[in-house]
Each structure stands twice: as structure tokens, then as C-alpha cells.
Length: 112
Ligand code: SF4
Ligand code: SF4
Image (cartoon, rainbow, N blue to C red; front, side, top):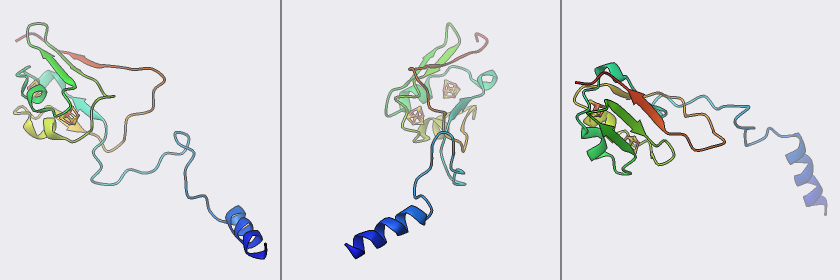
């Protein structure tokens, strides 16, 4: 009983081990691979990123000049970033914000 009371008191007055996410966001690590960004003006819609993506969450339509990514299927591995020959993909350190409904990331460029 005494041991349990000591445990309760220690837990009550010690710093919380978890955060109230998303209100309190942890500072990302320097090498964190977060949100995927396509600088669409440099994309030539070659589809290499879509072919290399292990979770098949990228679709490219060269004719329509669109690039889409399903962020709910993305595992943030960074393979598409490394594979892009035009260096238009990068990952920000910060993670994508939580969402209430499914969203598809759509980028539209100029047709080539
Ligand atoms: S690999 Fe790069 S240039 Fe090619 S479609 Fe993907 S983002 Fe665009
Ligand atoms: S980070 Fe990985 S899973 Fe996400 S789109 Fe790129 S290759 Fe696919």
C-alpha cells in the first residue's frame, strides 16, 4: 500500500512522458523525413517516382500534367526523392498535420 501510494504521488508530480499532440508538437529531428513536397515547376512528369514508390501511392499523368500522391499510403521512405532525376521532390522535416478526412495531394504543372 505504501509502495503504491509512493508510485501514485511520484506519477502525479513528475513531468508527463507524452505530449498533447497536435496541440504540442515535438521538434523534429534533424534527419527526419517528413512531408513530401513536389516543386511542380521543375517536374517533367517522367513517372520515375511513381515506378519506384514501394507503396504505389504516386500517380503521374503526363498528358494532363498532374502529379498526385496519397499521403495516407505514403510511408515517407524517401525513395522517390532519391529517384527523381529533376530533383523536384524533397521532404520537409515537419510531419504532415493530422486530418479529419482523406486528402490526396494534387499538383498541376504545365504540359510538356
Ligand atoms: S520523378 Fe521527379 S520529374 Fe519525374 S514525375 Fe516524379 S517528381 Fe516529376
Ligand atoms: S516517400 Fe516513399 S512511400 Fe512516399 S511517395 Fe515517396 S517513395 Fe512513395
